Image (cartoon, rainbow, N blue to C red):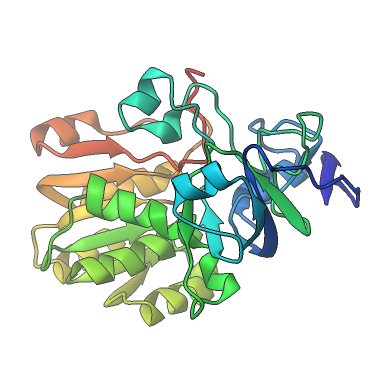
Length: 305
């Protein structure tokens, strides 16, 4: 399916390319609908380049590929894989330093690779998807469902924000503000990292998502639009605040709440993009020596670019 313009998806047929020399062909098993896909469809995001085959959270089976490419990836024809959304150049400064999600090329499957760039099949909303030889792919075992496998990059974001940015250790107190897909992925990772207590916070309208948060490991859930939520959260954390707070909600109020509940010398990982400048109590960050870290979703692009 090609997003030809905001609000218009069209079924278009493209030839499956020859990959004898480089690259591979993925037969798509599942592709999730990301919030980025929705914003591109609605025309509220300027990230994408249209027309484009949407779908960047994908899982499937390799059905054809160049021997050199497959050997480099450590997979073969018939193997199940999930490709990462971003396609690095492996030549720019960020790529060479290991920050390939910030590659200067800005190439993302299903977002910034339009159909007029051959071979057109750059997204997962179709039967087949072309995988460039510089792709980063991960093998998927047979006991993993397609629905779970295509969310590998979402869980990967949670690993980055909780483990690499937040440096959560067993027994650390963790709060996650925003129970969307990214917040729930962070909840799963925080649970596996041994966070305790683990609090997920969201609006009353997020009731169903908060229930999922409990199901995947949250010890407590709180409604952010109720009175005294900061005080109740701090009480759960033992009275001094949380060691790590991750904000995935795209709202200035969520940032303020996070600053209120993180402990002195704690870590705050800001993930949610607000779409505009925000006013934050900088004196609180300085006075409490809070470490404030940007944890950009790897599918987002910097204003500097």
